[in-house]
Amino acid sequence: MKLPRNIDAQQLIKALQKYVYQPSRQAGSHLRLTTQQNGQHHITIPNHDPLRIGTLNTILTEVAQHLEISKQELIERLF
Image (tube, rainbow, N blue to C red):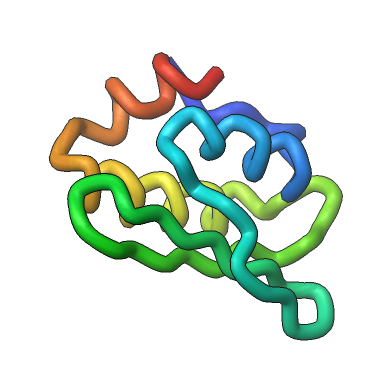
């Protein structure tokens, strides 16, 4: 499955809530999400519409590594 091309920050945040990522703070146009699942993990998401494909790819790669699943599996579960 390919990465979706028109995902904005709010859609990604809502999707990541399936893995217990919750907004922990905001600095300007960047939101920081934190999860306690599999140990504490933080990711930063720019509040853009849409997210750039490279930015989305990097965020999903980091989340997949933390959850110890493949990026492809994560994409299928989220979208």
